Length: 478
Image 1 (cartoon, rainbow, N blue to C red):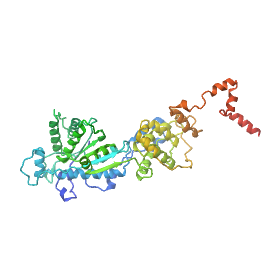
Image 2 (image 1 turned 30 degrees about the vertical axis):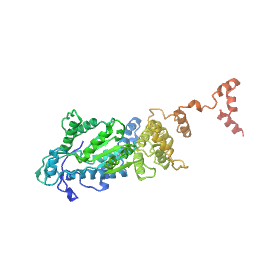
Image 3 (image 1 turned 90 degrees about the vertical axis):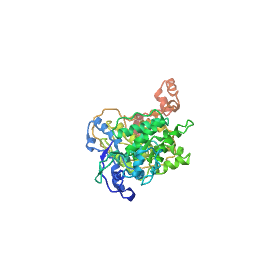
């Protein structure tokens, strides 16, 4: 949680000027400067590659999880949040009589005396982010939100003291699985108390009392935007709990003017589309769709280049088109799956004596790293629709490796990997199949061979046994 002292900068829009809540926000920056803030490239520490201790190199694989490569949607998401926060604060300038009335009276019980600057008119917007699990929604959201301070501490503005001290720019909570209004309210209360470093508020015993507490907390904290993750938990059933939750969220936007940010997996967008009212409110600020990266998009090329650099094997394997295609084929452009596959591939070869990363190694790493994801309907369907060009050229790999200490066996089917790499794929299929008995074409073959009294000769006759020494001796006689 990041606290900052208010540093006021004159707003660009005239209507934003003179509003300390807006002018305390980070100064407007161009896209390239913003993107730099979102990047996180772990230190490679390339000297570790020469370490003879394979355990030390394995430990560095944890840094793969720290990689943050901004994608094109980052700027779109950032600008939407930036606009929504400023728009929400526009009607809440703490120096105006309008806001003073808004802060001191419940929204449904304001006096009939209109302030000199007019009644409070909420300006809250709704932003919705939709994307499959693993495409990087939460990661992007965390990076974008981290651009803004969590809490801004105010002092004097233009030489005059302010009547308030703290401004909570954003809070992020998860949607309860049972669509409970009470659980969401309690989570929001706790998050606001935590942000302002207050003691935890005892929740009201009834929903109306709880809603009153929420209203008071949101007002006193000058909340900029409320982010709700895991909105796919909102299941539309006959019980009506989800409708009550939506009504509560609409109350926050319509009455308090606080922008909402929904983050969810499909089919949350289909649920919102059931009614025009829900759809209109959820998309008033922006609707952003995040899909798995496409093979030849700049997003994938940028991501895979940065990911592949995080390599702690004792021999550096260059990213060829073949390996790039294989990574995309296995991960389907899913960032989370790609990171897990690549980490597992290095885990498999480090300390084996041959630490080259090949397509076969990536294929073996896939079912280990994505054993559950690979069986989901989304992945199966996407894999059926995947079409990639195939390379005919062989990959050039570096033959020289350091004589590292061997501390673990090689991957299954890999005890002789340097000598017979062509067997890896077939051996892996045999190892992973759950229908091994069905793959045995002739289960009585050995018994018939024993019955002949000469098993080797029988096996040669039926084409099962290849006696290489016999063939070689015959060749020499020719």
